[in-house]
Length: 96
Image 1 (cartoon, rainbow, N blue to C red):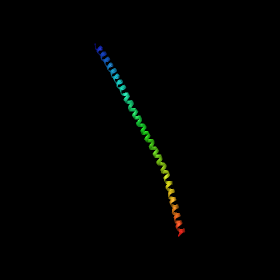
Image 2: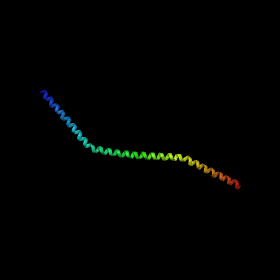
Image 3: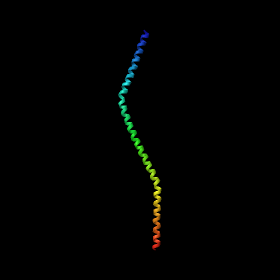
Image 4: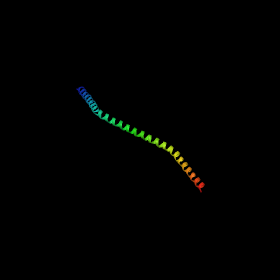
């Protein structure tokens, strides 16, 4: 008799676990579409972040290029001002 009770208890537990597993599968199937939407949103966010990163890299490269050109430009500008100053001085000296 005890053996029979144990067997019934075992079968009940086995059925309970099977039902539990079945319920988990059903819940997972219901959640799959929602998970798919969340993954798509994350993909879009990653694409946007990647685009912002690329834009930032481009801005940094542009800044570096300007920084390289700036000293040369200002150096040339100083030379031009110096030439004009020398010409003005020479003109005043020869005129007067």
